[in-house]
Length: 213
Image 1 (tube, helix red, strand yellow):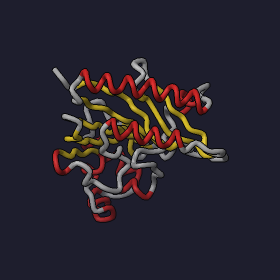
Image 2: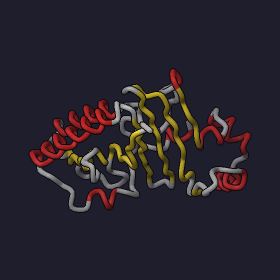
Image 3: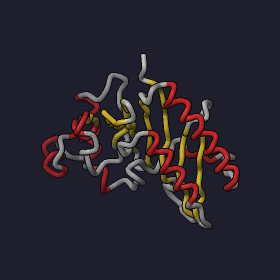
Image 4: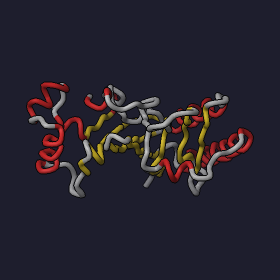
């Protein structure tokens, strides 16, 4: 897809700028503090998972300095990822309208890219509408490649990835792990020393919620 060549991403979940100023302000922790926070968060996650019978969904968000932003929604049933949907909320500097992407907003994008819809599809092998949003279900989950969408992992896999990342802490690699008000994972990632642009690489969660009625 188009953005594969333009966006540096980590485990298919993205460098971001919009939440970074909030995330990094006063949140550096020692390794022991981070391990303690992770342990509390993991305990909270196990409680959440048990209470909701391992049925939940979560949404992640990302952005970069090239005027692109996006969200990924993942639905989990009995611990298995059954749906992954993706949508750009900003594309080539054009914000998604409140009513969703439509003819006018797509025309704005194509004008900024200086190409027609046919030229776009010929160049990138996808219709621009397929690029702006898509959904995978069942066995299709994970089949869309070359995308900044979040990897189709359940939260057990996310926590294991975060645990290994924290364990891999070393000089020149600042690790970040943040939690929400329920102590569930809110963000996790790292910044390499000396980086000047789009420096955070990791995952930012917008929402985690139960799907049980």
